[in-house]
Length: 334
Image (cartoon, rainbow, N blue to C red):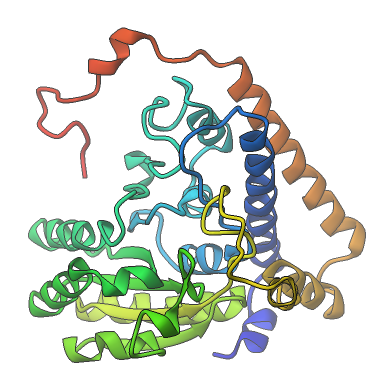
């Protein structure tokens, strides 16, 4: 189904929710950048600005009981999967009320109740974990699937190939979604991979391959919906490459000297939020004042998240040894 057709097929409430989620991610990330530079957030911090359509489109194609795991650029995925922005901002601030009790920070958002098994600070570290999650689903006779996000830089890691091979060999229900933002830190894909089309890197693993415009939330939704149905029905893996753009640097501390201002400006002309907003207005699905209300409400949520984080307590020394192990085994139920 083409994205233009999907625009007419989806209920207004669903289209509104897609827009709301993308705006919330954008404003959350902009506020995160502000708080980082004010010194309220420390450590590494990677923003999702520009890539919102991938997380929103992909995760809205899943069931609530499906499993999701991401890489270190994980704020957007966590928001769409249902993590509370207040708890997420508190985590960034290193507070006890954070989703990981202030112990994980930016790269380790985690919420097993929402079946979001976190960001992962190790490049490609999440890919074999997704194999394990999918194996657990099959072992228990479930019908859920696993969606694993990773960046273009991960395809050059050995874990990528090991995970692809095992997922295909064991017929595991995993969707591997590569968010190709064209840069592995400061290195362009063309200087790191002999195959510019990254789907070619997975073609030898006998799995279904697809490519999608990651700046179009409706195209991503359509592509992942079809992949999810295939994955759920056949219990076999899928590899999807989403071509996207990050508007900010690799991390907040990255000055992006390897990209020209003109290149960044061209990328922003393809803003996924502006693209959906124009469609909603042009088709008469939403009125300007309705979208402004959504934006205002998202801004209020983000402001409330900052206030919550500021007022929350820091962990105490005794907290360092908590949450390491418990009598049930691994501390969370899959």
